[in-house]
Length: 17
Image: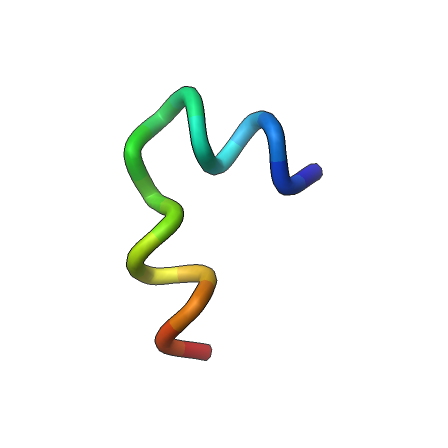
């Protein structure tokens, strides 16, 4: 699901977790 987060621009939130 990393690709989905990247497309949504939520990569920062994912990395912060």
